[in-house]
Length: 130
Image (cartoon, rainbow, N blue to C red; front, side, top):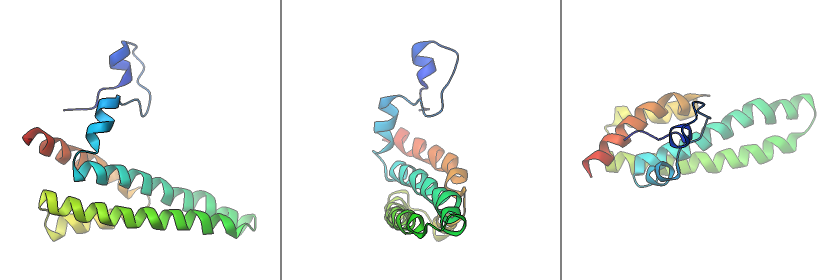
């Protein structure tokens, strides 16, 4: 099952980013891989905010508080990602190589976004079996 874009529902030809229907958003959280994807996207955004906004504010504008806040938030989200990864590994019966690949991707800027499409495909397979 692929996400239904809002443009497909309304009939207009312009697809907006993030215009996934409500049903798809809800079903995303029904599997551990779906939850991993959701946490991964938020964690990836927080990492980019830390690197692209908070670090320059600290070193170029003399605002170390930005790194304190963004770093703390990113740290909490990374812990949530690791918990979600552990749950996904157990549910999907991933081997150490697959789990390690996902973990390493989370350590790299843009990594969670790169692996998301593969996780989405695997999540769809698991949901189709249910």
